[in-house]
Amino acid sequence: MMHIAFLTPEYPHPALNSSGGLGTSIKNMAVALVKANIKITLFVYNQKNTEIFNDKGITVHCIAKKSYKVGGWFLYRKHIQHYSSKYVALTNIDAIEAPDWTGITAFMKFKCPLIIRFNGSDAYFCKLEGRKQKKKNFWFEKLALQGADHLVSVSKFTADETRKIFGLKKEIAIIPNAVNTEVFKPNLNTLHNGPFILYFGTLIRKKGVLEIPKIFNTVATKNKDVKLILAGNDVIDIKTGKSTWELFADLLDERYTDRVSWLGPQPYDDVIELIAGAGVIILPSYAEALPMTWIEAMAMEKALVTSDIGWAKEVMINAETGFMVSPNDHEKYAGRILELLDDEQMRKKLGKMARERVESHFSTQVVNRRNIKFYRQITGK
Image (cartoon, rainbow, N blue to C red; front, side, top):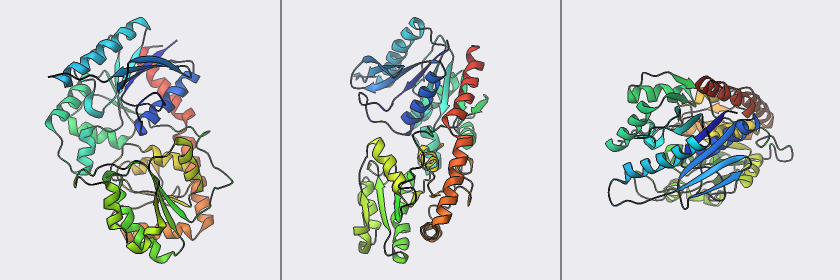
């Protein structure tokens, strides 16, 4: 039996720290691989405690965060390596996979192939956002990529940009993130309720969140009934040091404040209900690798207005699976939202096309076959 391990800072489970899109994508992959009779182990670092438990057939190792007087950036990495290597040998792990973010595998060596999957490195996001990256972080990420035996990216755009940033010569396989279409599926009871608009995800500048109030000001002026709901964790804005929600509220026309609700972070099942009940989903992100939020909403047959940057064309087909608009073109973005709110048939048509695209390109079944083929080529099993 093939045995694959994942080294990750996050994974969605009550016993672990909070998790985002990276953890969700790993869980989707791990669950699907277990169903295909592949043994899966997770090494989840930066946790509160060190413990081992089983999660529906997946062996989960929590590796506690450790503090050091000096050189923690090196010593903690070596601690993770020694801990993981012990179980690589004891449980016959055939390959270990890690993310590109922060270059966690810099200075690590394993007695099995090391795969790095691009979900977006710090250098990648700094380039997209026009931010300056710390030299130390660039160095860690470059060392990690140079030390990997195999590279795989969730989108061609991310692969191409990462190759340019780090001057990579190795081959980079392209395998997208997957969504469980049995979990994210149309809810016929609330499929096209409208007219509320939904944004779900972290409240952060790079997701285009600070464009939303400017867009909504125009929408609310022309539609007297529409409401906007936001669900997700607030973060401190990197440019101003202020709460992103506070910045959002400052940009919102005070006439429309009673039509906007921020719910904060929501449980998984509640997010699914919110998606099902929304008339239009808006995701105007400036920086992604391959966004899970887009694919999840598409799988639920929702009408989307997204950004039109880089990776977008690998997910969406403009005017077929939804609309792609530049996030800073507020008038056009608002116009597309209003168009969808006013036309239920269009919402249904685009939603169905979106679901079909997910089933053919991003469903667990389709992507899992590609991942298994990739792992078999590496392990020879």
